[in-house]
Length: 311
Image (cartoon, rainbow, N blue to C red):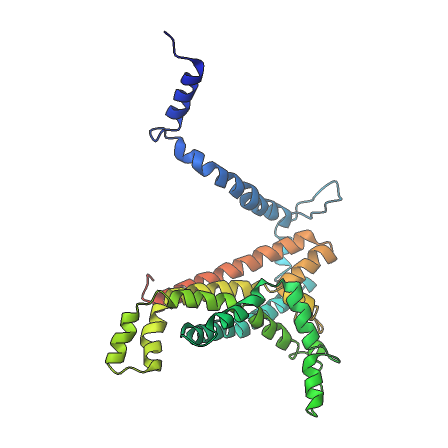
């Protein structure tokens, strides 16, 4: 008596999906591979192609120009001047904001890890700004530091102090951008530190107390060393996020005054969609991406060495 067709089909399917079939692992990897090729490999390859051609989506031909747009970033061209100037602006913001975001987040986590009154409420208050969009955050801090009617200048007037044109003065324009960024994102880093502190055994602190260690010594010799892996993650992600500065300066200062707060991503966007120089903007993106990779590698190497990890 022959086996029914549905039964034979089910048996073949079971045999095909069995662990003995060498193709099964690749079938599980196939969905991720498709997404990776479509959304990562293809865009990068297309970007490289665009950066070495004079690409115009409305033109019939896209002439090959080789490394012309990369060379423009190192020769005497407007692209070089504006690219490196805005990169310096971005690095300045990173140097200022990253220590604030790391040290302040660690300090808040240390304070709110203790069983203080309304601890859960304070944790929520510091975390809640992170759920706002960058546009809402930018409008709020632009209003706070408005040159004429901003709350900060109103308070200065009430105190008999002269007002400060924050949004149109070189140097002062970074104040609302930096403070707004810290207020907006500090809750995420604080939450990471709180979660890491919860994994530190309480017996270590109890033993330190028996040896007469005070609060500072327990923090210095127990908490900080055991938070090194979390600090590495916080520093790297915060640096990468700061290097990608865009929305804060776009909304609060518009990149002004005179490009004093314009970030490198703002300039790349302007070059592509304002000046219609897509190939030039793509070359800038690759150069900036390489710089970010170098910064990340240096951070990992330095902090892993300090933590006693592999060199």
